[in-house]
Amino acid sequence: MASTIPDPVPGRHDTAYAPAEAAFPAEAALPPETPRPARNPAAPEHTAPRIEAHGIDHIPDADRRGRPRELFAVWAAANVNYLSLLSGGVLVLIGLTLVQALAVIVVGNLLWLLTGVLAISGPASGTPSEVITRAIYGVRGNRVNNAVVGWAISVCYFALNLAAAASAATALVERAGVAPGDGVTAVVVVVIAALTLVISVWGHAAIMKLYLPITLVLALAFAVVAFSVFGHADFSYRPAEPLGGTALWATLAAGLALIASGPLSYTTSADFSRYLPRTTSKRAVVGWTALGGFVPSVVVCSLGALAATAVDMRDPQSGLESILPGWFTSAFLLALVLGTIAINALTAYSAGLALQAVGLRIRRSYSVLVDGAAAVSLTLYALLVSDLLDTMSDVLQLTVVLLGPSTALYATDILLRRNRYDGPALTDESPGSRFWYTGGVNVPGALALAAGVSAAALCVDTVYTGPVAAALGGVDLSLPVGMLVAAGSYALLMRPGRDGMRPGRDGMRPGRDGMRPGRDGMRPGRDGMRPGRDGMRPGRDASRA
Image (cartoon, rainbow, N blue to C red; front, side):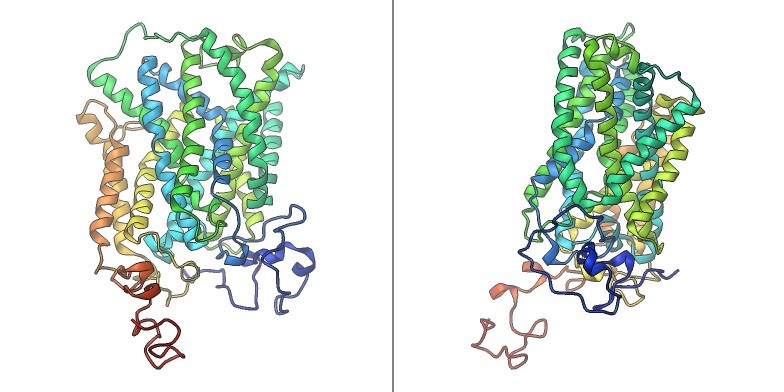
């Protein structure tokens, strides 16, 4: 099915593809056909916060700004949250010793390094992850990818985080003297979702401005929590009947999948780095993104595990209240809600872009509201119908079956292309697009994803037990197997010389920046620069070999 969103045309601007200049009211009021006033790139980006006009379109160089270190606060604020605290507690509840739980937390969070690797494609292309993956799956194939991995799973994570925050907020409301009930829970969910969506609708600039102060507030709150937890935790904790043999390996594998689901859920990290200048250091983008996710995730998950050695984390509000200072309990519950708003604002933002990338002709701000409505519905189900901890554990472990292979494919594509992405070409959804491939689908990408997901599904042991997991006594190897099979299949099928990755196509030319070696990578005879053409005769304009 052809896209319902037109490609950007110079001089014309669709609402879904409006450039950043449309964020200024005086210019936004002009009809589409009217030339827009020139903008001074040196001028301040905004005099006041305004709703982001960019969606899945290419960000021009004039609108690129910022520093990679700003990414640390974005990811740090998003990972000081209630879900991480619960995840750490679950590791102890399922039978691990404290040492084993802490080891799983560190190893699982090392996958934030992959999130950092994916983020470098943002400055390179100037487009969000939802568009960059057209290089992997093709224009049409990527719509399916965005519908499932980009939108559906994002909404599930939104709902799980919202459910966790609503539990904390409901406890806070009860402390204020309001009687608990389903009606109160529903109101709390809607209010938290509304606050979250305000940030998501406002967009990228609001996220970059708000998340540093949010990070500082949350760090202060959790420092108090850490002081209290350390005073009560049993650092030599071992369950009454320690696990051993196959049962231990099965539990370790399940715990690793639970923790790894956090970093793997952010295959969209380029959404928040795409406004950085294309010359931004790749190492800096990887480092600040990975550290922003890794450090707070390890700290908060570890606090959850430590708390589980002293209190019953199956009822975390009551358990934590018993060890926290009385004056601080309300502040802690507010911090949990704030942290969840931070993580869900990122999730809803990316889910909105995914809806656009699916092909819906809808403004980014409106698409975010659709995400919120779907997430609220799922949240009410999780809180009012099912058990939150069981639902959380099953969903997070099961999503690894999809997220592991898709993350591995994305990272492999970045390595194969040496992070050379043509942003304007990626936004072209026509049959003549470089990324149309065969009927709109890149067959090697689709096959590699199918192979990775199938291999992971055979090894999973969550809501069902796959045959491989059954043969191994319940040891769930879906995470490493799915990632390795997907990455290996893609590297084999998309090697240079096959399916659109031939040298000279899609930014894959050998040499510097896709050019043959020579001065500035532009040897005469390539790219319309033959001697005697376009004023580039030998001896002029530094074009001589």
